[in-house]
Structures are given as C-alpha cells and as structure tokens.
Length: 326
Image (tube, rainbow, N blue to C red; front, side, top):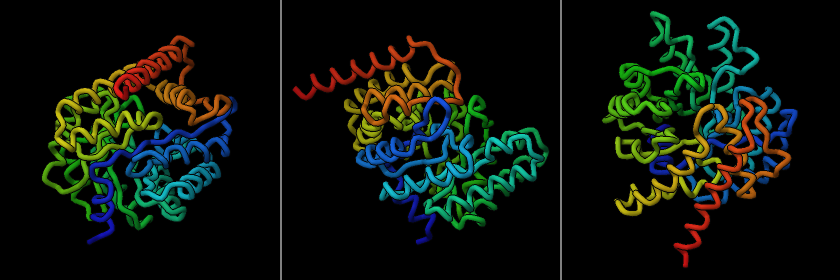
C-alpha cells in the first residue's frame, strides 16, 4: 500500500478541524494560548487537523510563525497533520511563476516540519489562463515532488480566494498517484458541490467536504470525509453529523444536522470573512481560547450583536444537550 493510500484510509470517515491561530490585537500569535488550544482540540474525537488553512490565516502568517505554528501542532497531536500549501500573503503580487515556486516551497517546508500531507491552495490566476488546467495540475505534481507527501486538491469558493474547479480538472488532479483526495468548499453553490462530488466518484480518492453551510447535504451527495472550519470550535457538533450518517442513523443524522446548521447560521454568514472571528468567539465561549488571544486582524470589523448571536446559539445548543442527557 502506498503512503497516499494509507493516509486516505486513515482519514476516510473522519473530521479534521481547520484549526484557528490565536492572536492578540496586534496580530501577534499567542503561543501559550495556541498550545492550550491544540491540547483541547487533540482531546476531541477527530481524524487529524489542518494547519495553515484559511481558518488559521495560514497565508497571512510570517515564515517564522508558520513554522512555529506547525511545530506546536505536530508536537501536540498524534494524528495526521495536513498543511495548507499556498502563496504567502507577502508574495501575492509576485509574477505567476514566482508565486507557483513559493507555494511549492511551502509544501516542502511542511514536509520538513513533519506534516503528513499538503492541501494545495487554488491559484485564482490560473482560472483565466488558456493553460490554466495544465498549470494547476503541474502545481500539484510539483508540490508532491518537493514534499514527498500525499496531496489534497482544494476547490475553494471565490470569496476566500479560490475559483471553480471544472470536473475535468478534478478528475485530472485525482488521477495523480500522489492525490489522496480533494476538498470541496463552494460555500453555498450546491450545483458546483454536486458536480465536483460526481467528478470525484469512482476514483477511490477521498471526497472531502469543506461545506460548513451545506455539511449534511454534502454527505448525502457523496462526501466521505470532512475538513472544515466549523469544527475549529465545538468539534463534536460536526463529528456527530458524520458519525450518524456513517452509521445509517437517519433520525440521529437529522437531529445532528439541525444542530450544526444552527451553529453555521450564526458563524458562516455575510460578511463571510468574518467567520474566523466568529469561530474565535465560539472558542472563547468553549474555554478553548482565552479572550486576549481571540482576535482576527485580517477579517472585517463585526458588531457586538454578532458575538451575542454566536453566544446565544451556543447556549441554546448546550441547554438542549443538558436536556437530552436528563
């Protein structure tokens, strides 16, 4: 069995939180808070974690912070660590070839630091190019060659910097020997999500849902694994849905999906880039992140009413849990 097949087998049917990066008001990473948060996440029943992802503001981290963040997670979590490999924010305006080289270098760095796989960020500039599909496939090949690790493709919605992957591109990516699967995060585009799942069917690769607002439906459409920002806090809400679906527990699936959907409604709404801050608020409520480390300097300003809505949602869900336990 290849390393790619072995990793896919370990991850299939599990939830990987796309984890947060605790920061203070200046944007400095709070490492003691990060370690405590990592220990809290590691205690959950999860299949692994995704670092350097959008939820953790991976492309915004300095090179030194990026390395140290992964080191903390590798130190703390005895599970697969998937690292996002993309173009650091400082190089966003670089010529395309330089940007591609930078993403490949990040993949190699992830391997050096002990990651088990890399998730290759989409490069939106590929979308408009006549040879965009070829360049995207080659980028994934290069990331795998430089890192020696299995790769995940990443169909990411435009609001987070991605672009729609065609069914042809998905099939070509999943035909690569190094491809463990593809993460699909279309936000609210049900047709795009369904088409992507269909393109991945029959390949044997992981079909990874990143659909925070369509989580339950994406499982019904064919996703078999999850890598989601909504699991960065209250991960049990997400794992309960996947567990019920895998067990064929229809009633349990409906209950768990309803609960997760209410949490998603309070955290993944316009402006969508505010979801990182909302998830940090949820992590504070949960006791996983301290108040002084719960700032997202890269998202939009949000009114206090949004925090109250997140907390109110969590309190209602907690009361329901207490009532069910009785």
